[in-house]
Image 1 (tube, rainbow, N blue to C red):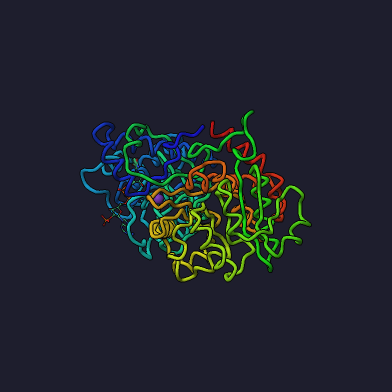
Image 2 (image 1 turned 90 degrees about the horizontal axis):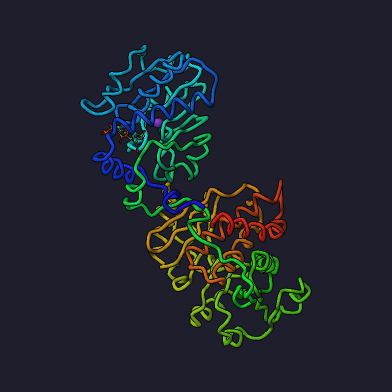
Length: 474
Ligand SMILES: NC(=O)C1=CN([C@@H]2O[C@H](COP(=O)(O)OP(=O)(O)OC[C@H]3O[C@@H](n4cnc5c(N)ncnc54)[C@H](OP(=O)(O)O)[C@@H]3O)[C@@H](O)[C@H]2O)[C@@H](O)CC1
Ligand SMILES: [K+]
């Protein structure tokens, strides 16, 4: 099982905090030596010996570059170094630069174009503004790039692009991945991301004030089935269905059932007869919602898939008045467009980027920060869906999900996800844990669904996906 601490995604500034604490225990020069050696090792495993140019910036990222250059040269590779600027005097990077005895060439596009591989050690965690046009031109001239810690031009905290960029083949980072390694658009420029152990004391990692994790089992635990389980302990998930889009509610209900809910009921009102033509295990209620809410065992409700904004306006306030745990999606998000405070009291919302924008405005280049702010504003867990789904809690915690497949980007997939999340909450998980687990399980089902699945296909894999989450979380 991955320990929560192993899943931490410190931002560059949190890494700075870590480096400062580490300095009194392990000299930065030793960490830098380990980092550079790890880069050289990764390059040797990745490529056959060839002409390498190492581009070094003035900070410690550049320091890692000088060390990597030395180790590659010692391994018999043909290596040159080009410095953007001299390393900061008296620092560990200057020490590393002094040990470089190989050729130094100008920091130029022609030198970059001459090399078979360019190692980008220009900026890493310390980049705080867009790189200059000169740097962009030099990187663009490279045939193959391997980045040290982070590709120059990608913001490690947000994954935002700070300039036009060529893509790297590989990025070698240290200690832990950073949010920018998982968040788009940056993620697609980093190639294979390798995280090297450089001897940072684990105890120090536990001390930093980082509240961002990679979404994997171990961050949360999914309840198992036990000999005493019955349908009410496995959990009851209820949904509100409407007249015009019955498919969405049925997909959500199917997602809830296939991921292990004990009982799933649809409140279909006048449409009950049509819903009864569906799968026999799905219970359809025709009674008024006010009556259904008298059953206190029906704690978790999904509201929005298949509902118009008018229908949401009728049912969502009733669910909140009855203090139910509500997962709001689709129509419920449209109902609150421009007035997100209408969703206060909801346990979780699951917007895609378009729905998020209609609720809160454009998130800009920092979707992680925007999701956190939205969660704080509403007191609600926000699941900002996408290829790098972000789950943010009102208390500042956030998880980034990289466990997914583009196959999930199909109509109805979000309805299925709301059902899975409903099931996790009905099984007794906290809202944040349940949302994180639901997103991972949905991702796992997508990964198991083969090429070009339709939303209905995901259901077939949700049980196995939940089981994988349970086993990996042990
Ligand atoms: N985490 C770990 O455990 C370990 C981390 N290590 C390594 O340390 C790296 C972080 O080092 P770092 O803090 O020195 O920052 P780094 O990225 O080298 O750049 C800072 C310099 O660049 C400058 N600068 C920034 N942006 C600029 C721009 N656009 N255009 C121009 N200048 C710009 C900035 O200038 P200033 O803002 O001061 O003007 C400053 O001089 C990290 O990525 C990893 O590789 C290992 O060695 C050891 C263990
Ligand atoms: K770099």
